[in-house]
Amino acid sequence: MLPKVRFVYSDIYDQGYRNSLKIQENLKKQNKEYPSVGEIKKYIKKIENIWKKEGNKILNSISKASGLKWKDKEIKVYVIGVGNPFSDPLTLPIWKNTNGFIDTLTHELIHGIQAQNQEKFQKWRNQLDRQYKKENETTKNHIFLHAVHKKVYLEIFSEKRLKNDLKKCEKYPDYTSSWQIVETEGYKNIINKFRELTK
Picture 1 (cartoon, rainbow, N blue to C red):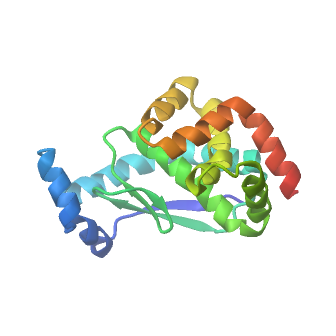
Picture 2: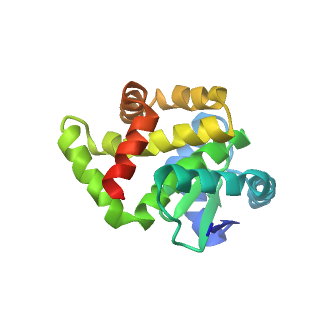
């Protein structure tokens, strides 16, 4: 059964980001302002419409590729004005490009399904620690994730959209390293190895 993904605006949660001195300084340097509550809520409506069309396909693709089941009935996505995305609590800032928002959400949802199946995922982590001793934790954490995400891109979206993600990741050496491993070993091989190990 697929979870219901619910996009949430929490005023008290967003205030922490809105009042962050670091975020305010960064926005000032870029000559930008933190989005208003109205802008964030309007953005959520836009994302909800996109998710209605694409959401179940993405959730199905993640589960099918990974061989993992969704265990939570509902997944809340807290939408903030500005800040870093992360998976728990699932938090995403608004993006100018809605494709970027959906692709980042997909990334965080893959983290989420792993967390919901921690016992199985630990077997994979043990394998990674043996096979990729020289890689850091962030790189190791994203090898399987990027393999699954590549399958989602090619199954639901396009190679062009995948290439856009690869380009964005060039700013992050650990992500680049994990993508390089996926490209070298092949995303299908990594997924098959994971499924064999965790069945």
